[in-house]
Length: 221
Ligand SMILES: [Zn+2]
Image 1 (tube, rainbow, N blue to C red):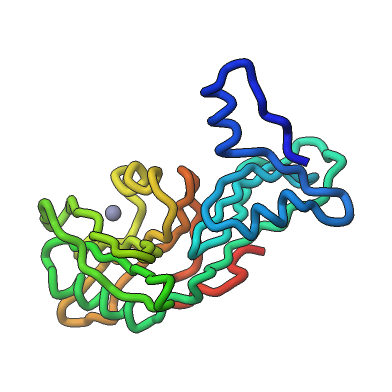
Image 2 (cartoon, rainbow, N blue to C red; image 1 turned 90 degrees about the vertical axis):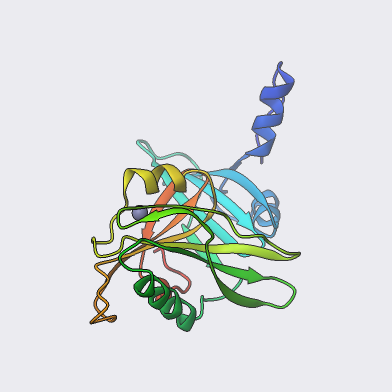
């Protein structure tokens, strides 16, 4: 059952209702959790014997990500971590095209988005409009999204520097729910030589995942 989450303050109540708490039943099923996992655009905290999890649904995603391990066993069932791409895997050739785009932009950094259109169930690659780009920094614009468009992945390059999550990346990635990737160690004379990192960013939570082209469910175990 969800906590009632009706507080004395209406703002506190509204905030709590935007992220309800659902307990995983010790046995059997929970209608609240089933309804939540079937929803298109909601957030929730799932509590189980193994800890607290952030639940996120989007038209393209269902994620249940661990945020806290239980210090004592609670009388609930175990919550299964989950990362399901409702949109399916990202086509590898789009990631290859993005990497080539980044090589072509050397010595500067560059950025690109993988966008999924739900009605057409099609992915596309879009290079990000740049406010400024240097070999060590880029400021870029979000793409204009049409009806049914969702940003699935946000990718940028570190030019010839290695792929890693910078403080700027961490700050940027805190504010949205999408897959983020960084490509580095790019070399014009050897485009296949590069380093890459990927992670799922969701409501301020970040969790490293395997390389983009091999995304498939379940990534988490
Ligand atoms: Zn970066």
